[in-house]
Length: 353
Image (cartoon, rainbow, N blue to C red; front, side):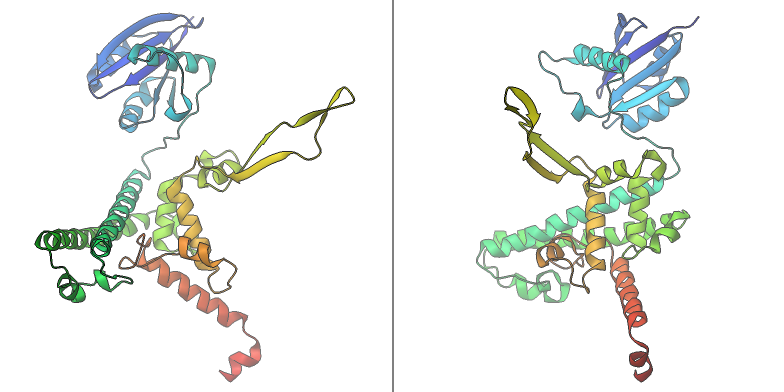
């Protein structure tokens, strides 16, 4: 009869602290090994019985998941934000705590799917990261002009054809050189972003879900590719409610003092003080994607307040604030709204036109 072993791994750059518990929850082995594939596999192959392994999500999680998945019975990549503890802390204690939580089944797992969408996922991550870097550089460019009292509202400050005129307004030599460096960085990020966007669209066409997602209003090629990369598969969610929570649209309610004493007996208060709001533990890139798509879809109907329209709407990469998710999505959504407005017109208007 084989026994089950619960293995907790505290992973670091050069070493991994390991604690092993048996069926009774007792520590039967502790060791420290190098963070190398051969050392990890030798340790796993030296154990008998059903092996259940856990480690926290981090830089090494994807590599370790692919390495250990074929060799263990159960593998859990847990969320480190939900593993908080008090008291002393070191690698040995952390490994013991992970093994104990695995034994007690008190771990919140992080999804690690197959390699089917890994290329698209990495391209999407590159696209989003470069877009954020581009937004930061654009903010730095305007910050230079504002720090010297030069008004720079609008998009003209980023245009290459007007760049000489804007640089001529800076009198300080050091500030001028810094602005030139930022412009060079801006041009490099623009060209790199176009290249990553091209590869992202080419890779997304290999997935059948892209055509289905593009049929949704305000979901164009870029948003469809990002949706597939961020969600990977809808089957990872048990119902639609976990998907709402992952997207940042689930409602959280916080209340206190729900009961009061009435004639010596506790009764639930009729008027409870509760606070409701959206959950913050979500995928913020996915939330911004849905918000921008919803805003674009309702711009012409005017159902979204102006503050949300300015916050969630896409902008071109030469505009203020965060760069858009893709110029293709803008034209894609506008064309769809124009077609729908034509279909909704009365017959008399279409015939006279």
